[in-house]
Length: 331
Image 1 (spheres, rainbow, N blue to C red):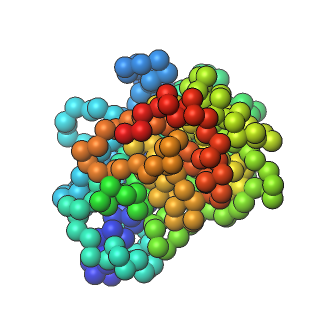
Image 2 (cartoon, helix red, strand yellow):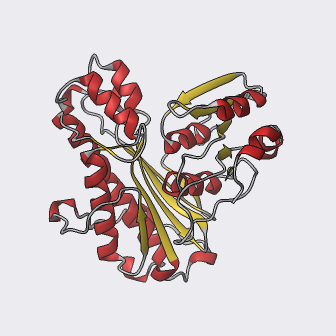
Image 3 (spheres, rainbow, N blue to C red):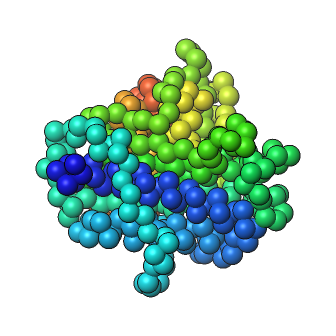
């Protein structure tokens, strides 16, 4: 059946299975107690063994099945042979059984760009590992480790698919979702979506009527971020890690706006979350209200920040202070 399916649906089905494998790798590295952390270029810019293994797994798995697609990953890794145990060949049958939106039914591999963040929320992942202080036995479900697991809730794996610069499909894997459900419950979940069909793997909810709850950065705040958040006159502010995690908060009704008035996010942070948010009627833009482009040759930095909402995007965009807009590039 898969051979007759639209390319984008096969790619999405493969991305789902690859993201599930990625979640397993992320958990395995944490459970080992040795994250093999290295510092990259800036403050709070860390890379772990999980980042490296997951990116190799995703890129090699998708490239093997779809050799003509362009894949852009966060990590700058050397070209090397990828171990066979990192390759995922499966495809999620549920996606293969769905109808492809007509406008994407004839897309070719070479027209698609895949943006990969192998471990969104690396800072929270490393902090949780320090708090756990050693190997974690999977079957124990992190018993007596409440603080670390709250940080691990922020961790996601992101695979976004773009066409003509637009984020059209994506998957978000949460490796540590469901930890509180007991030893027999399966850890992790994967959300997925495509424009024109919808998004799946979660229960879509809105915040209570009249409530303005803003989610924003946990560890990369500055005056611009604070000023923008305060300008929204929120009833509550939630500070958490991970762009993927913040979009999940929007679609599950925990927050009404994601406000990050600063450079810092990259295209691999926002492509998959944007596609899922847009698939359920939400919107993600820069702080000027302009769409980001996900072509293969664009700058990786989202230089004008991120503003995302499930509803009432224009209201939040209208409240961004002029001082913030003037400070942020609009390219």
